[in-house]
Length: 189
Image 1 (cartoon, helix red, strand yellow):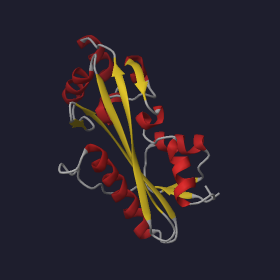
Image 2 (cartoon, one colour):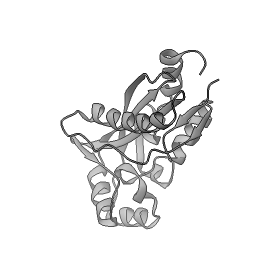
Image 3 (tube, one colour):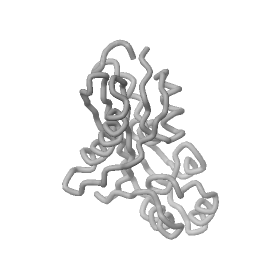
């Protein structure tokens, strides 16, 4: 199997690659393309993943590079990572008792510099959260570095009533990435 370069510092993406049996090294992208509001959320998140993969591929010619990005969307509005606890509280209030989408874009650049990617979308049903629930969850610190202000793989799982789609999309890297690598880039993955 070929070793890929994962253009991400996310511990969740490293965990998923290891679980899927994708051999990898880590070289995080240092910059991120701005979210293009003229694109659909599906295309925009894939474009960000592409920018990460291409940044690392430019300095690692002849290597296979995987870039990924995840966003949370509700009512057509993209929720980023909260900048303050007040941002986190507002995001969690907007998700409380509702279903939202989590979109993860994936882009792979092969040894020859050719790239391809896809976007995986999952719908997540959030439980009702009281103000006390929100304050207690924010006090854990977990929401502060997560898109949409929650982590499905952590304490935030308490508030998930259901997921329609790939759990790993919500976590940050779709399980279908392994199959995509095989089909698109050869059986060496």
